[in-house]
Every structure is written in C-alpha cells, then in structure tokens.
Length: 152
Image 1 (cartoon, rainbow, N blue to C red):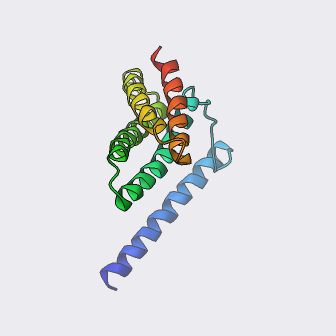
Image 2 (tube, rainbow, N blue to C red):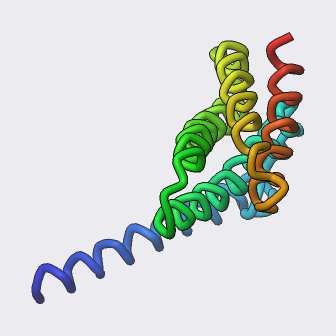
Image 3 (spheres, rainbow, N blue to C red):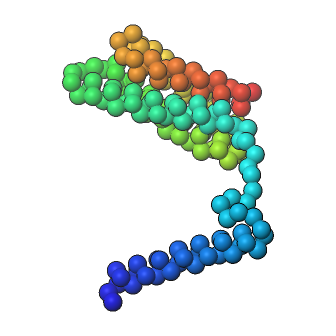
C-alpha cells in the first residue's frame, strides 16, 4: 500500500467515525442527527444582505471597468475601478463582521459608509452609459443606509 492509498483509507475511516459519533449522539438524545437546535435570526441580516449585494455588483462593475480600460485610455474609469475595489473589500469585511456581531461592527460601519459614498459618487459618473455602474451605485446607497442603522 502506497502513501496515497493509506491516506484515502485513513480519511475514509475518520469520516465514518465522525458520522457514527453524530448518529450515536443524536440517538442518545432522541433528536434528529441533522440539526439539534434552532438559531435566532441575525439582527444584522439587512446589512449582511446589502453588503453581499454590493460585493457581487461591485465585482461585476470592476470587471467591466477593467475591460473598458483595456479597450481604450479612460482615466476616469481607472479612478472608479479603484473606488469599487475599495468598496468590495470593505463590504466583504463588514459582511463577515455583521454575521457574528463583532464588537468592531459599529466602527467598521462608519468606515464602510465613507467608502460606499465615495464609490457611489464615482459610479454615478457612468450610470447613464453603463447599467452595471448604476446598479453598483444603487447597491452602495443601500449598504450605506444599512451601515447607518448600525452606526447611529
């Protein structure tokens, strides 16, 4: 038996052992193995959703902006791409912090508000010609408003 086969056997054994433990624990407590407790709704769900939407739209906007930059010299689009890149990073971070109600959430919300405002301002310059820029700007406004609820 070579190392690869040994690793497969060991991994398979560990998975079976873990599955067996879960079934045994569920049987012992007379509860279904799938899920033994319910979670409360996250009070920051609006912010989590808004941040995730901003990330998704921001990544699409950034991709479009980079494509436009590759086609011709478009200096204003470069500034927009930098603002969108900042927004994507900030919204990714606040989405994570909001998901577990970090003690730093309020401070981060204030920073994200500024970043979303800057991103929206740049994206508005292109919204008449580029639909994704309008969508990104609108998502920044939504995220800004959700952050404002947390930061207030």
